[in-house]
Amino acid sequence: MRLLSAVAASVACTLARARPVLPVPEFQINLDVDPEERFKEVVEHFKPTLLDLVDSMASSSIVKGLYHKIAQHRGPENEELAAEIRGISKYSGVPLEDIQTAQLLYELQTVMVPVENITWPWGETTDTSGVQSGFGCTGVIARSADDSTVTHARNLDFSFAKWLANMTYNAVFSKGGKVLYTAQMIAAYQAVLTGMRRGDNGYTIEINTRFPSKQTGVHSLLQNLFVEKRTTSGWIKRKVLEEVNNFEDAVTAFSTHAYAAPEYNVISGNQKGVILARNPNDVYHTLTLGPNNNDYIVITNMDYWDHDIKEWLDPTSIHFGHSRRVGAQKLLNASSNINEDYLRKVMNDDEVVAKDTIFQAYMNVQKDTYKTELPNCEDCSGCRDDNKCLQKGEDCCGVRSHYTKDCGGFIGGGYRCGCLPDGACRAATFGRNSSKGDEDCCSFTSHFSTKCGALGMGARRCGPKPADEEELTIV
Image 1 (tube, rainbow, N blue to C red):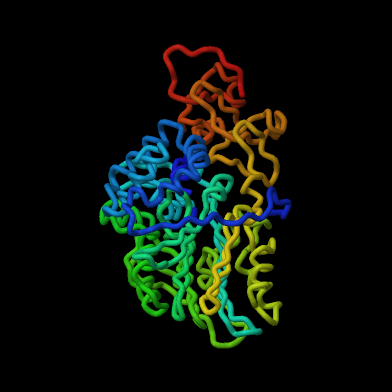
Image 2: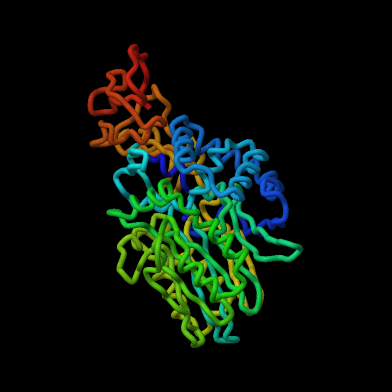
């Protein structure tokens, strides 16, 4: 079942790119304004794309039902965030529960590890054997040989890039007439994913996905979200950036705040840099930038020091069986000067960039620079719409696809984007004439039917078995 794929987005190029590099839209966010009104301009700007995303991903009654259950069992967020959520719902027309559930985007997408099923704290179980996560992100902190300053470069890789690349923006937060920080955000998701607090001893922050352990971590994460109701990671980042004005105290805050899920925090400063591999309650591992020119530290999404095999199974990498971290290190080791210009080449090289890299940043606290762009990623506008057959190396713009003989021939077959409505016949591949293929159906259920062809060749019909079936042709 791919329900969790529709709830979260994780947050993740043969270089036949689909569109040019674009500037990142910028909006002024005044924290002195009523929280319900703060993001009115943002929502109105991105409303068409937001509604298209909701219509594509949350149109089925089953997905909507899960959204509402998650919102119900999570309960309201703190009053400031809850007010922002109400405002987004008001100005976008998207149901309040959908916006509320979206705030758990980072935490929920980390459970796509894969696991066979998820048992929610309220007792319901969701089968996730068909989940395919689109995780990503690369962060590099490097000291240049030409001026010894420290540059922080980041790639943000996110599934559903067709929409999210067009919903990404920079928010300049101010209070009392003073600019406090700049943060990269995604419309309707009130979390900071990348940010910078300027000043002589300012700092930058990047969040990368770090996955919980399959055995105990997923259960702990769900308990943190729905029983302890811990504050979401992105909101913690916003409050630290708002209230903490120096590198040392920021590192302490990012090291000690209780999170709901594990994550990597990539933090740079004036002549400083550190990467924290966070558990929900503590720091598991730390990488610290050295004092020498051409030093660097790098992280993607895996504990490579523990030889995590998932590093080599990244579906967003351009090269199959490739580690983006190893690719980055190879390029970084080959240079005698890791300055901003070289970092830009590294982050856009097909050894490092992902199919769904939707945002890039190059930040330098000492130089007071925050440079960002929307790269011309393969999936940003090159994914396939519903009802289109997938070709090798392509992805669906939505979260669903189904097998059909019409996409590749009767023997081989292939996949078409979109799911099958109840009543449609689900084609079978070898060994799939069972409920194992029910992820092809929009309702995630099917039944045996002689109306759908010969036994063993596709005798499954989407939906529960009705009392009186009509004759259908096999899809």
